[in-house]
Image 1 (cartoon, rainbow, N blue to C red):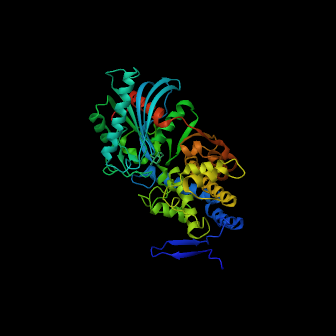
Image 2: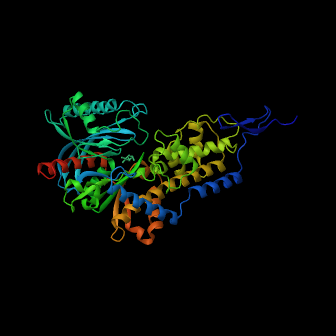
Image 3: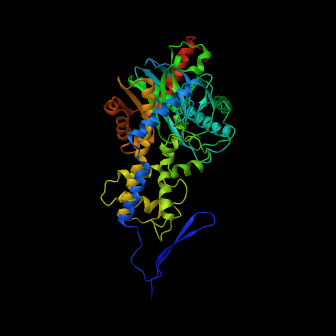
Length: 496
Ligand code: GLC
């Protein structure tokens, strides 16, 4: 009897392709898999797509630098370059008890920070995971949740005696989304990023919204400063390592902050601040190349991610780099190869076809797999997606993860290089405090950033060294609150 075994690709009315596979009941040869050669041919195609030459990187750096300068000169530019009203570096003698609330991309964290001076501190904290629903619900409800968690935290720490009853603690609020600020305890949300979409928040002052929640829950705290995680990281890192000039976050989102002279921030010239005064700038560089898409090398997978996101066109740089998207890039490639009939013929692929089901942590694990058989990768595909893989396929997936992870690190190097070249830090060199899950957990991410910096700058690129930063959204936010209190008490720009 002729074998009925074979595959067929059918075009659906929706434009998608459906691959069908049949095999006879007597067939015991196992599932069909792509050959080693097929996988190698595919890999070559993806290598060409995801590779970034040093020359291309230098072109990106040039355009990036122009974007940074434009953002400093005028309001409403693609890269917002937000003046933060954090005036200069910490002195290191900041002391006292502060509350810090950090509404991050993945968690809400509330902390009690005791600054002890001389770069020393203590921190007590609680973390709450944010659900996907919470990120989309009414803005005020989201802040009320933060207020409720803070209230529970303060009550618990009053019980233990860590927080004295009757005291009103100064609070640093880390809100890591682009906000335009007229002063340090104010911030109008320009746009949500990192998949948040809570209505009635964009265009509103988030400090005022959070104050309302604190009142509602009778929290004995006073918001002194609104900061972004990058600004906090810049300040906290400098507190312990004064060579720090730049701070970056490579996590669910990506962004950087650095210190700028007020005379080089033309858009705030009208405020009458001493031109020699320094102020931290929150770049919000995740927005680089948004809408225009003229400078970054976007593949069709990046375009699909962008178009199907809740913010099409926005955060163009971030969508190529940050932890929220890397797993999805790999998943889209795998799904394309499933549609083409190259991968997983005859297996039920519905699990891997669910958008965002392929966590970026899987890429880390795949790259880290120490076994010859790539057992970790077997486990991931088997356990999470009920799929069986051959060694050739697993080697291919691992190589793909490397391409996606390496491109992210090299693009990150372009961002750092743009600030370095704008500020003229290359000759004397500088330290870059970096934080976030990609930087801390993705294997080889820092090494690849450093390699990228050398591809851009040559030998001198070695002068720019990234290192694991201090906790910006907890400690950094508390230091900013302390600096702000001291500045206002001394009547220095008290209205800003
Ligand atoms: C996003 C936010 C930015 C934040 C970064 C890292 O880019 O817009 O404010 O710093 O993520 O968390």
